[in-house]
Image 1 (cartoon, rainbow, N blue to C red):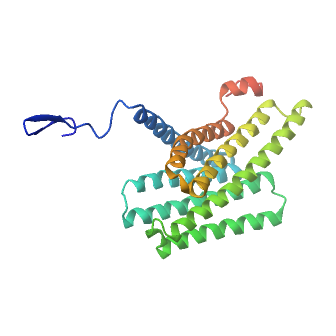
Image 2: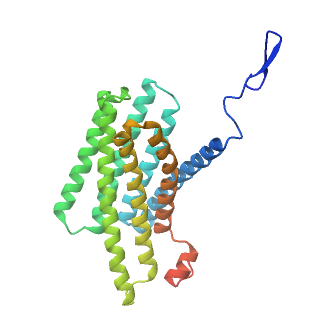
Length: 272
């Protein structure tokens, strides 16, 4: 038994527990795991609330954002659950399927950015929808061909690089658009054309995009420049992942669903 005594040659030898329940490392890991779980749950709730809101108001942007968050939340949660089943064929196929769902969320994200910020640019619409469709088709093809059965093979590496490159480009696009919208709203606010809350929401949106962009770039750095010291970069990612994810989801929550206090302070209303 982990905490029992082992008799050997008339001596009692204490077998140390495999996990020190009082170690600060375990406590820190528990905190970070809790942050990740909370972030994923918040992401799913944001998506569901936006989808329900779109059904009431008929808003297209809310529906696009809602489906983007729901697909990404399911993808993140499913991929982590699949890892619990170890190095099995079913687990690898499941990870590939959830990666394809992640690519679907990127497709919704791309279309939503175009719809919200550049709806009048038809050429951009064709580019966004075409690239989104190609992305989803490519990742689903990886799954269908069974490349995901090789955890360290070209299939999984290709899927990761495609997802990360597209995600980084979309997040950078969203950050730039939100920053420009924030500056424009600041000028309009001085003229009394918009309420301060609109400016704050664009700032929160840009912070959320920046956090997610930094997180993905840390993953890229771990797989490239961090190859020589994988343990160090693994520790960095483990520390940064839950903090950045929680901060990003919290900012996005406040962007779409400002609190009553934010309404009173920045919007002049009662928050209802």
